[in-house]
Image (cartoon, rainbow, N blue to C red; front, side, top):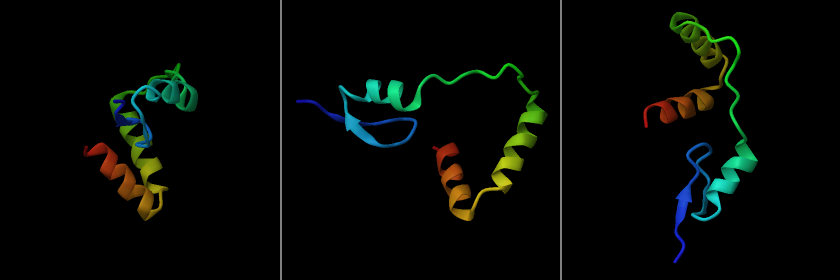
Length: 67
């Protein structure tokens, strides 16, 4: 009997046999940026983006990074 699993990217639930296709089609390949910032620069970018989020968005980010 087929099981159900969550997509680890968007947390939607899919049939186990379909989740790989979903990931490929819905999320595609993640392209590595040509420029790779140093850790302090990356932290600055992340905190800057986080500051722009709504309170709901900040809550969702916190939930995802503390899993």
